[in-house]
Every structure is written in C-alpha cells, then in structure tokens.
Length: 316
Image (cartoon, rainbow, N blue to C red; front, side):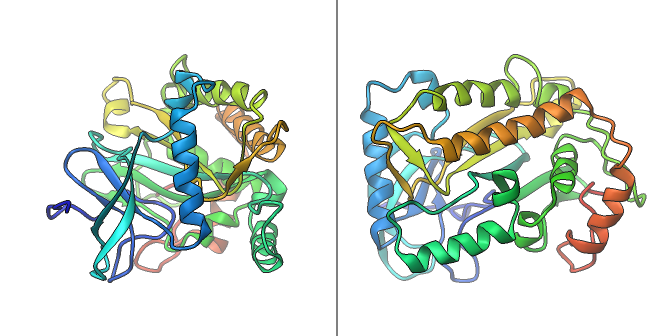
C-alpha cells in the first residue's frame, strides 16, 4: 500500500477529472510519481495497453519517448474519494520539481472519437467537437492555469467550457497571455508577450519541440491518437529573471489511442500543424492591432474570474 502525505491531491491539474470535494481524481507522492485512477471500462484497459506497448517499443526513438510521461505500471492505492483501494496508472509527475509553473492543456485533433466507437459516444463527441474550437481549428484549449505573481497567484477560467469555445482570435490572445508579464489590474491592457521569444522560440523552446514532434507524426503509422492532449508549461519566475524558463511539452491522455495499421494519423497531425501555426504567428507578429477589441469581446462573452465576475483573457 502506498502512503501519501498532505500534498497527495494533485494541485496543478488543468483538465480532466480533479480530486475535489470527494470526487475521484489523481494523486501524487513526494517522489515524483503521478497516480491516475484507472477507468473501469475499456478506456482504462486501453490506456494501460498503450503505455505498455509504447514504453517497450524499440522502433520509437528516445527523443520522441521523452515527450511522453514515464510509465511505471499499475498499483493499488487508496482512492482520493475515500472509496477504498483502486487500481491506478503510475506515471511521471510532470510538474515535479517545478516552481509555480504556468500550464496549458491543448486537446489535439478536429475529431475526438475513434472509428470503432459506439454511435452514442460518437454523437456526444461530435456535438462537443462542433460546439468548441476542435472542428474549426483542429484543436481546443481544454484547460489553463497561468501564474501571474506571488501576490496575485494564478489565473484560471471559472469553467473550462469558457476557453474551449474561444474563436481563433481569442485563442491567439490566450496564447499571448500565457507568455506575458502583465499583472496590472488596468482594464483593456494588451498582453505584452514579454516571454514569447524565450518560451515559444529558441532552439529549446515550445515551437521547436512541437516541430520535432510533428516530424515524427509525419511518418509514424503505429498509433492513432484520439482525444489526446499536448501539455505545455514553463516557469514565469525563471523567465522574469532572464534564466531558462524550463519550457516543455508533453503528450498526455491515451485512453482512446488505437492501432494505426500502417496509416498516418492525419487527424492528430492536422491539429498539431494548426497549433504550430498559431505559435509561429505569435513569434513573428507579437503585436496585433485587433487585440484591444478582442480583450473587450473576451470580457463580455467568455472569460470569468474564480469569484464569478467577468475577467479578460489578458490576465488583467
């Protein structure tokens, strides 16, 4: 039996099921391990099967494996909701050792359902894909937790749907805010993209990592990734002090991965290319004359603070 300390609830989670208010969710220990409850239906078995296959597959280069969480099998641990011992995936805690990381979860692909899915599941997924940015953009922001300052803490959307339904211009605004230093409470302040060049750009930046991942997806036909996400994060305090911001991406959520059967995963690849285009445009055109009006639109229509008041996506 695994023993957990007071910090066993995973606090950095931005998407998926959280361990809050007696609900089942992931746990962490103090050794850098992340315990994800195994879903009881075929999704849980499918995710275990993927991790076992992927981690042992010698055809996958080590530099590609580094984009995925390390896998350490499954274990029985006490569930976060107090329901008793349950099987959990044991994975790498991707935030372990990070201080106040800003994190964003990007669900990749214009379609989140796999071809063999039952009709009812396809209908639910298709409805959500059409109602969010997945269908028009090829990806959607599933969650975000952006560090503002020690005094102001984090910005998070009041509910995740508010950022899943953003327009293309609003997504770009959010991606700019992710790498901005703005912490002022002045209304209508545009994100300054102060850390775009060090977080998104450079030989070790997020764009370079995304392009490296894309090169693999342009060739690999082993797996098709449905409803998986790119998780990106960095440390604002390091970026503010001129140090390497520890910018990195990881792929997460593999309950709907299926065999590629020799066919390129065009759904994931297309969404990844779309997301890369957004990041590239921020690096090449950080100033956008339409940003002021977009902030106003976001304030009116989408983004809310945790206390329920309207809150703009520029983190003011």
